[in-house]
Image (cartoon, rainbow, N blue to C red; front, side, top):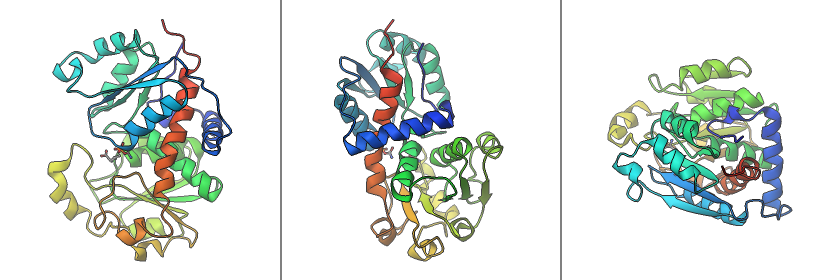
Amino acid sequence: MHRDFLAIPDFSAQELRELFQLADAMRAGTFVGHPLAGKSLAMIFMKSSTRTRVSFEVGMWQLGGHALFLSPRDIQLGRGEPIADTARVLSRYVDGIMIRTFAHAEVEQLAKYADVPVINGLTDLLHPCQVLADVLTVRQHLGGWEGKRIAWIGDGNNMANSWINAAYRLGFDLTLACPEGYDPDPTILARGQTTAMIRVVRDPAEAVDGADVVNTDVWASMGQEEEQERRARAFAGFTVTSALMAKAKRSAIFLHCLPAHRGEEVAADVIDGPQSRVWDEAENRLHAQKAVMATLMEDTAQD
Ligand code: CP
Ligand code: NVA
């Protein structure tokens, strides 16, 4: 029996705590095993990537295994071979599949037909590996998420939806400031609000007021490039500037999943300033994903 990681709620709160402990040990260098020796991870990238590609590939190697980078130019998926067939074939060769693609339903279909764990490396709906790393960064710098106030400024996109999922599982306070028409997914939001204090507001200053963490992302995500100009107009006033940061707690940290557009969603003096933790955040992708892979793939016997 194998497990997938398509969304943060695939893990219970207790399992998430254990993942963070394992990731901390990996960052500290106290975890030195090679639990994935002899195992392989297929990495399907239908969109570009720097962090996800490198952190999964290096992470797999550090755990004793091996990773294959598969782009649509290289594999038959790019020429229309069905996802279900790709899933069944890859499952005969590898011990896990990481996929980054557009429609979330494609990842669900891959997971349905694969006999090995499937890990979501970003869809239009969710980016769970990134938010796992983000919460790990909050833990690293603020000692934990309990009682913390997290502000999200900008698009109600895959990152925002995953932050809502994290709040749903872990119960921290989350306020999202999104322009009208750019709200997070309503189903994910409604579920999140059943267990956590999650609000959507229109004013970035209201979201940031007294926050412990200020978090943003690009205004046009991958696949939305042609909407760039319209979005730049809609997101006017949503730039995270030092004036906006000044409304958060003095101890507040700034996060951004990267890549960033300085002068658009974030001012250069914020992302490159003393409150920014974006490089630790990027590093934490490696530790968080190694913890996920070790947890999901260690005991998976290949059929
Ligand atoms: N944050 C993130 O997922 O970066 P990449 O697109 O470079 O993988
Ligand atoms: N929301 C962004 C995140 C990139 C890591 C995108 O989907 O392009």
